[in-house]
Amino acid sequence: MHAYLRRLCAPSPVPIRLLSPFPRSSHRGYFSSVRLLEEMRADAPVKIKIAYRRIITSLPRLSLKSRTKASLLAEWDLEVARVRAWSARVDSSLLERWTAKKMCLPSVTAFAVEQEGAPKSTTARQESTPSKGAGVATALTTRLQGEVDHLHPSNSRQRLLQPSKRLFSTSHSNIIEGRKQALTERIAADAVVDLQQVMADLRDLELLEKLHKTTVKAAAGFKDASRCLYPLWHDVDQGKKSKVTFAELQEALPPIYSVPWTHIAERLTSGTNSKLSTLSEKDKAALLLLRVYNIGSSRSEAFVAAGARTLEDLEPLARRKKISLVRAHKIGLRHFDDIERLIPRSEMMAFDAALRGALRKADPLLECELLGSFRRQASFSSDVDLVVRHKSFVNKDDEEAAASLMRRIVEVLEGENLLDDENRLMFGPKKYAGLARLPGNKHYRRIDIRLAPYHSYPYLLLGCSGDALLMKLLRHAAKKRGLCLNEYGLGEKYTADDQNPNGFKPGTLRVVKDEREIFDLLGFPYLTPKERDYAVWRPRYERAGVDLSHVHKL
DNA sequence: CATTAGT
DNA sequence: ACTAATG
Image (cartoon, rainbow, N blue to C red; front, side, top):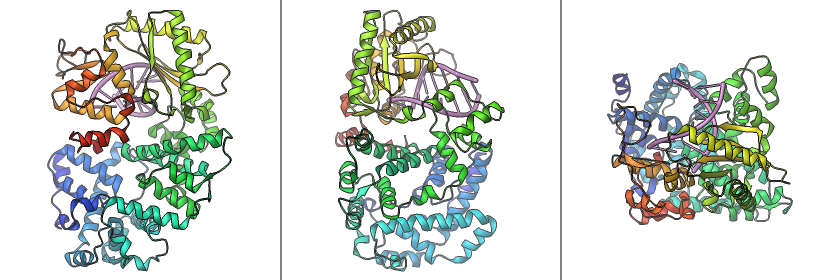
């Protein structure tokens, strides 16, 4: 197997490095095939896997629908062949011409390849895989034309090969600034924006990444952008605002969100989104189903294959035993809208008070707190993240103690009408997931309840407050030091032989009194909860000299 | 066991 | 990166 992969990844006959004759700083957004091919040459099988992920996520290509394990190798083969064919067309004379023109903008470069590249290899490719070859070319052209349009709205396609001054900007921020300016020139500040549509686009683009199981990073970008716009949308939803202008949109979403901005720009100028509107009916249906709780990429595709196209199709299909719908799916369908809606901070505070009050009244020894984005001071949260501890639950493996404590807690909250057993999504000893509603409120909200083994509390605070990327970073750092960090503690990595349920060797657990000590143990500058958002900690850690070079692939 | 969800 | 619950 490894030999097979290695054969595929033998050094390319073309000196790929030549593709990037520009200084490092100038090609941040630069065509990732270079990196990809460099990684393909590396020996480690793990790297090859990463390279594979990169290939299928970063090259302009048709969306590959089936991601079954069996088809992976075939896809791999095809993609490698495609990259080879593409790179083989980049000869040194062409490269020199680009260099002379200072065409360092990657997408333009790629566009030029498509225009000037030998038609022979394109035809050859189309012969072997007719639908795919044609699709790739179309997708590439559409995407790049879209991008260039935003940089240079007035340019026709022919002029792209002799780009004007503004295309020569070499830094990423200049490019972004250029885009922003081009947009400002095209759209009036007081133009009314269909925010509902923009939000739907961002949501679907995020889901598309999820459906195709590509990088979480790309999906995160759309999610973050959507979060930036949510306060605006909420005001409209609440009737506090009748319309949103382009100026307000620009104010709310910073230009660093370059990819989301590209899509928004297309929507605002052309009224459509080419990436979404060209999806097949099946893919569109799969995107819709993905929005149901407990339907992920796998079930979504399976349900579509069974004939589902709308949410209403699911129940009949389940009755005819074509698919199986479990509890959580039915709840997810019943509360489809509520589960997607974010919770304003004011309501989170009300939940905090109500939950604390109910638990304290039942047993003064119950200690609880809301974590997640609420603890990071977010103005909107996607769910209520409650963590509870009690001296009756000390050892994380004492399932009996946990289960009886959890039953008590759920009983209390159901007694207060905050929870109800109808809307139970998950009910294990250490974790409950379901829907909660404040008395008099019309919306149900997603709630997670976690039990903390009494002395693990600082670790649980850290682990459950996030954000997700920070957790990955800290755990990765622990791993590199031969340690293992989880929400129960930090200890020496456990060598799998002996089956001890703990993540670390017995007796090596570092006992801490607060979160700060955990940062200290790992040698990271302390972050207050509010500082644990990627947009905040990334630059802060960068300045402190923390090695973040690998963060992008966490 | 794979799938989903969570930070 | 690492964990919990489900079916």
